[in-house]
Length: 311
Image (cartoon, rainbow, N blue to C red; front, top):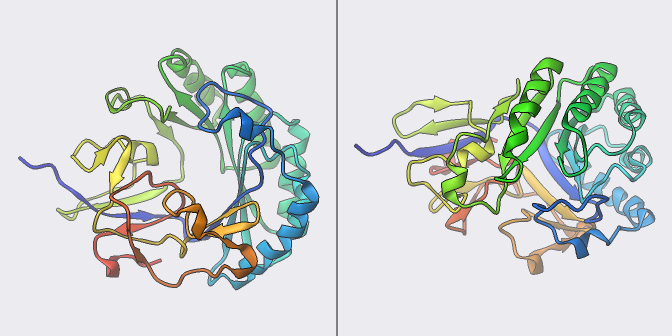
């Protein structure tokens, strides 16, 4: 009997996402990091980021719907993010999302959350727990303390699962449950499909990222990105989803900026196609995927029928 096939992946976020990579610099050097250490030594000049923020603001102003600005590195929270975001005054900015190793002080994150609240801008924190640098119990309790001090319900702990780290997963899960902190366990991207097919990439969050539609009309809202890439029905290969014949909302629901160069996407678009941010314009309709397989990075929706994408 043939397994049912996915015909649409709808990202449930109604905001237009602009992902801005500020730097590749990081104060950690994790063994499983997908960035090379040489890149991590290059910290973008903050004055250049402040200048670029004005162009980011222009792009946000031009967006047809409210925007989630996703700041990532490297490690971004060793910049003065309050000062940086003050250069983006657009009322169209609805949310700031950050992936961080959470190595700055609790006061830093609490202050930033309160600053954004004063502007009626939401904050989402994805706190990456790296066992090579922190004690899991202390780390989760720090996250819980910031959550309680700020009232954030969009804060979670993320942990990379590999043969070297999986022994700590149960402890991290237990402490997260005790502290009422959401969590997500993702497989190390360097592991093969056999390892990644095990049910260790778990997620506990009140916010469902996707609505998946199958060819029999059924739907599923429980799958995370990592779980979706391991969906065992022949639509995945080497931790990527077969998107041949699918339409995608890259450049429409999701825009990528690498310091000061902009693109529809960072994974599937060649770097030579990037434009200076001052020249970039947001797309207005879905585009046919030009790749056979996709890692589903970014806030994108996909469907076999263009008309089924309602972003």
